[in-house]
Amino acid sequence: MKIGIVGLPGSGKTTIFNALTGGHAETSSYSGAKKEVNLAIVNVPDKRLDALSDMYKPKKTIHAQVQYVDVGGGISGKDADGRAKDASMDEILRLLRPVDALVHVIRNFERPGDAADPQRDLEAFESELVLTDLIALERRIEKVEKEIIKGKKGDPNEFELLKKAYEVLNSGHALRSLNKIAMSPLLKGYALLSAKPCIVVLNSADELSVGETHLVAPEGVVTVEIKGRLEMELKELQPDEAEAFRKDLGLSIPATDRLIQESYALLGLISFFTVGEDEVRAWDIAAGTHAQKAAGVIHSDIEKGFIRAEVVSYEDLMSHGSYVAAQRAGKVRLEGKDYVIKDGDVVNFRFNV
Image (cartoon, rainbow, N blue to C red; front, top):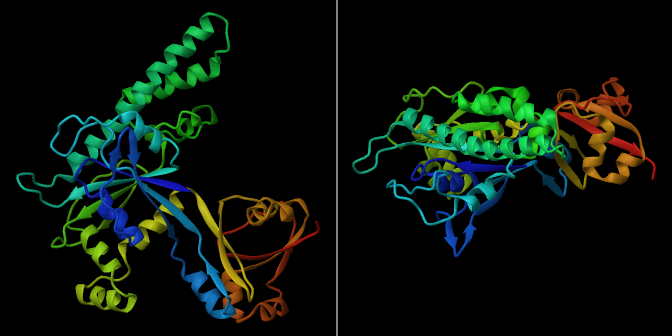
């Protein structure tokens, strides 16, 4: 899972990246024709995994993970002062196309001579995404149409879908607003930016109260407010010190934890757990995954030799205090290959290689 951190120049994308990762990355830059990006893998906070680890006392505890990439800059090719940049936008787009989702950072802090206007910036960047996709589709539609006319490989179904997508974009809407088009396998290869799931991050100044700023996000887009600079500084403290500061500031959990969890959920992912003395681990799978396919996430041999899955829900395991007690209470079930794994299932796969 890879999530791209995007936004207008000067919105604080790298600050949010550092707040998420606890790193000290500097603003992404170009080295010759190559874009230097900030990349990090972040554990998904999960209290259930922590509780299972306390129960089993394993040698290792392994979280599900999300990968964030901060490419810097904006997709319009302009810097923070509105000047055209020399760096190739093709390179930025090349880096963003493979990501699974976007985190759109919006500035909610003052800069000299430039008051914050989150709603304006949100709408401006949405327009950039739409325009970028429009340009890409114009070229492709023209190419496919010529192929069809000449009786070559052009796919009429693809052509019709491209035209529908173009109509959505031309009306000023992101493709994610029409899920049927955005999720179409025929469009997947184009990796259109406005079709990608998106979370809006309101990057607020320290002095602002959370919830003070009103922001109308596009339909289906989750908004998370983060005091980016403050969260970045707290990330550098020891956990107990950070917790004390949060208490003094009236903050509960880190806003970055919510963003990580929202990023995970945005991709339609759930977690199941495997437990034991050696390792307690969270595995990420798409919601709706069958047991045999889920086994393959652990190892292809387990999927091939799948026999049965021993399943107990996290809630039942914790309420009975141990796996053996849950078994005695009839809470551990044997499920076949077509069982749909549920979020929080604790699973032991039986298999034969």
